[in-house]
Amino acid sequence: MKVQKDNMERVTKMVAEEVQALKAQCDRERENAKIMKIEAERVQKERNVLAHQSALLMAEVGDDPNGRLLTVLQEVESLKRLLEEEQQNHASQIQMLEEKLEEKESNVEFEIVEEKLKLAESELEVVTQRAERAEKSVETLEGVVQTLKAKNQ
Image 1: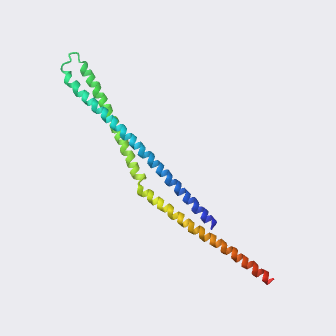
Image 2: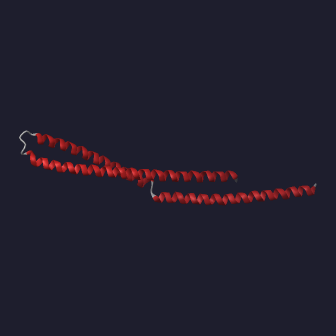
Image 3: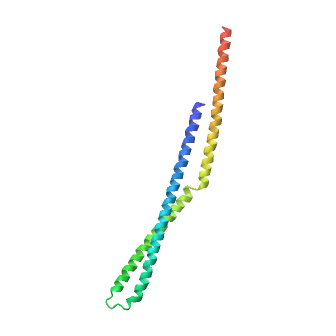
């Protein structure tokens, strides 16, 4: 009975630790997703500014005899492409993190694990009480056996 009690306590402790670890991981992944979303928004704003600047420069390209504006415009276009790639990378990373959250860290799963933990704790308490009663019964019966042996001798 004691071994079973120890096993139940160990399992209960392991489940509780796993639940806490999963919750911590969920929090970390949510925080990472927020950071990535903020970064993607920043990149989007920067891209929009560059697109506006590019449009303004395009209007002035026709007036530039040296072609300097055309060179600047090409550089802006290159930067725009780079920013778009970064935005796509950030968006895909955010999507990946959100999918991970949905897969691993759903609240329903936590509730199920917590309910299983509560059930295991209840079962452990019942088993512990039964073991204590059984130990008391054994002690009582051993006392009766000793008394009967003493009377028979």
